[in-house]
Image (cartoon, rainbow, N blue to C red):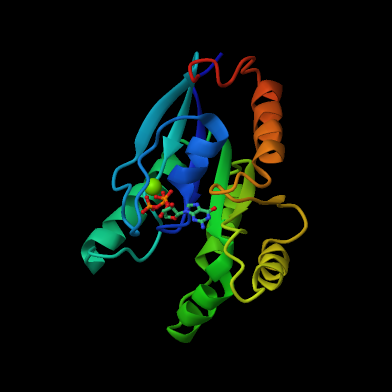
Length: 196
Ligand SMILES: Nc1nc2c(ncn2[C@@H]2O[C@H](COP(=O)(O)OP(=O)(O)OP(=O)(O)O)[C@@H](O)[C@H]2O)c(=O)[nH]1
Ligand SMILES: [Mg+2]
C-alpha cells in the first residue's frame, strides 16, 4: 500500500482542528483565534496513512500580509506536490459566517476562496474532495440554511456537503462513516487503527 494522506483544509478558524478531534479522536490543537495551526501538522492514522492538519487559508489575526501569503503558498505547494498521495481532502467551512465573509471579500475584489480552493483541488489537481459545513450550531439569525444553500450552489452538484458541528457532534457520525468508507475503498483497511 502506498503512503497516503487524509487532508483537512479551510479558512483560519473554520474548525479544522476541532473537526479532526471529533472525526478521528486525534488531539489536534484547537484555539479561539484564527491562526492557531501555523505549520502543516501530520498525525499517524494507520499503516501508510497520515492525517494532515493545515493552517488556515486566508486572513489570520496577528499575521502580517507576508506571513499570510507564505502560508497560502505553503498550502498550495503541499497540495500540488502531494496530489497523488492525497486520498481525500475535507474542506471545512464556517457555515455561520459563510455569506458574510464572501461578501466582505467580494467588496475588496477577491474571489470566493472556499469554492475556489475546492474546485482547484478537485478539477486541477484531481484530489477527491468533500466539504464539511461546520458550526451549524451557531444559528444566531437563522442564517445557516441560507448560507448552506449558497455554499452548495457555489460548489456545484458534484461536491458532497456535510452539515456538521464539531461542538455538538451533529452530523459527525455520517461524515465519519463516509470518510472511513472512502478510505477503505482506497485499500486502507482499518483507517483509524492507530487512534483510540
Ligand atoms: N460553536 C462552534 N464552535 C466551533 C465549532 N468548531 C470549532 N469551533 C470553535 O472555533 C474555534 C476555532 O477552532 P479550530 O478547530 O482551532 O479552528 P481551525 O480551523 O483549526 O483554526 P486555525 O488553525 O487557526 O486555522 C475554536 O474556538 C473552536 O472551539 C463548532 O462546530 N461550533
Ligand atoms: Mg487549526
